[in-house]
Length: 567
Image (cartoon, helix red, strand yellow):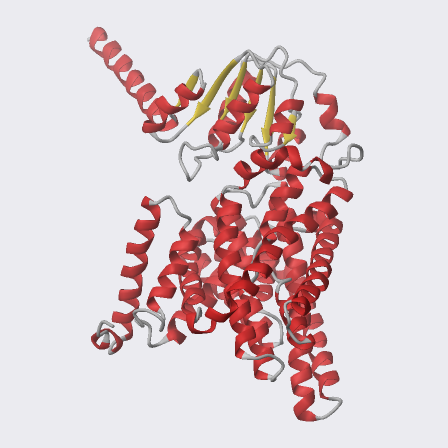
């Protein structure tokens, strides 16, 4: 074992060693095209007591991790509003509660069949119901799918899960207090948490109603102060939530919701995104540090059984419920994959049971190993979700109702009968500019985007717009392609580069499958992708920065020639 005593002497050296290790392992993971989450968990394992034992002051790393968690949920809350809650409340509630009930009942039966006593089996079953909001939101953010329909639904039922987590841990904590304070202790604890919870909700509502916009409008005059205030507000409500018996996650989420109605939420998100990614590094490191291989060896086979159950059973129940509610198989599948792992709260829940004497260390080791397997596997499942759907699509028809699909409105169906010259996918800054110029030139265009707010804005301006994802082959099959001369794909740059998971390639392939005979144009920000995209079937490849620079140079040369001829 290397001697790290010189690092342990100074906390700054310890933190430096951790960052250097994270950068090195992250670079190796990048070369191997592995998700950064897996690389950072590996950093935690290497830095923990089971390997190099670099971190001797875990409280410092855990503090940064907790701040990162609060900030992550704060930024998620900034994207939530009352209209989202109203539109997705039913499916979120039904899916969240249905998944919790299914997983806990079936998990309890599996635990008994594996020889666990009833109380530990119940603990394990409840622990398996919790999915990691942090990991899921991070992966959805990386794939730019937080604003997609399945992303919003996933966040909705994750919030329901978090409420169940709070309730379960609250009851467990109150039960422990009751054992110490007498038979009625848990009643007092439960009533106290409910009272403070209601008080916090009233405080947040009054802040939204009377103070949020005026206060943030004044603070926004200083961008530096806006960042400081936002971070302080997220930490404050996270701390209050934790103090009153809730989780820091719910407190941070409420902080974000309280500022979601202000006109500066996008500015806050853009300024804090990099800080969020940096601080979350420490959360994944802490997660890896807490993995104790000494408790895992005897639990291999039970952990594999439970892991398969979580990886397959949880997505299946989500697809069943969403199919019954009228959602398409694709939406149900992509949302279902987000619950194919257990949460860090599962370990906290089991640790509470261990402190109360309800479970043994071996049971905690079992759940820890299930967490390691399911988190690592689900990261790949979510990262490559569209590829998995393409592979499994023929088997998923049973999860979709042939009638009663709720994702497509009558207004959307009416657009299918209209003639269009051009269809534009992606309404970011570049895609919107392309669409606006085409409209100005008199072309009949249809725009498609997976952000409901953007689609609603274009409809309000009198343009034909559809909510949809370029990776959805069913959506492409339903488009009015007859007579369309060009399909323009102006999606934001895909993080993985050109691969079969790339939505641009999925769209090109889907157009070919549906007999589209017109031209296809795609955009890229990387010159090395131009030839690859052309080989795959794109007739025209835009490089916004390069094209703009070339046009600017041509205008400058034209002006210079005019100036010389005038002299």
